Length: 386
Image (cartoon, rainbow, N blue to C red; front, side, top):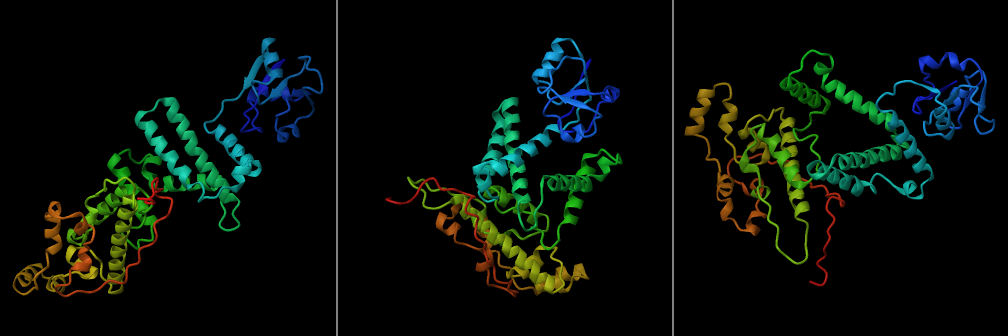
């Protein structure tokens, strides 16, 4: 007779060549899914009844002893082609079992897994730079574990719960909406694909701030770079950026007395909140912040009022600004030019927006700096006993 091998991830999918063989009584191994057994006219479970080889054997485990024995007899094997991703279903099932029965897995939360997620990302990056193909595959598996784990934890939530299928659907919806031209075959242009992606991504945001979407828990240097990239697009005045964000000084000490990483992040968040406050103040006046002078006005810095009022006549605006406009304080710009001459204490204590008091100003709202998550940097040293 023959051996029919099923795809364990799709137990109801019968290979076309095996349909006729299942019309009579067949032998099955114990792991065959009940949903298929219910549809068979008749079957015998291998182990309870001796397998004499007279019946077609149905199994989803190629390494089952009964299957291996049949292969020794030289019987033909009928199996369908497997689709990519089938083992992901087994991974989902395994994660579900661990969450339900594992003492450690039952105790975990999104927050308790943060450190492991961060470590796995760094290990993956290291394997990309220095590892072998086997190491890269292994690290991708570790990262997949984190995705499966967080999705399974979310499925247990009493509020706003979701599962791994919702995560997969989120991926499908997001990528489909951001790459319509590529998926529809309309174009294969790299520049067009990037434009489509950026346009769709911007449309997904609430468009309340140009800084929306920037993750503040990412490494501080990357955070500052992201902020600078966004601000550079909208003619943000460089004089409004504290010099303390342009360089990082790490004290050479036996014991760390503070986190340079978190200090830089806090200063970056201060700038982010100042930008958002200026955007809110401009929105209340119905003004779109599109040039450096308008930014200066709503940041509470010195600005040229005549430039704003004479926007209709650009030539007249330039002449008026030269003749009548109050002088713009360039103190902050000069401080940036002389950055190398500043001491560390001076560098980290100056805020151009707070220091600039000259000219006609409009103060932004109070800026509140949110607390930096405690897991971002874990100090390995303490100042105790120093």
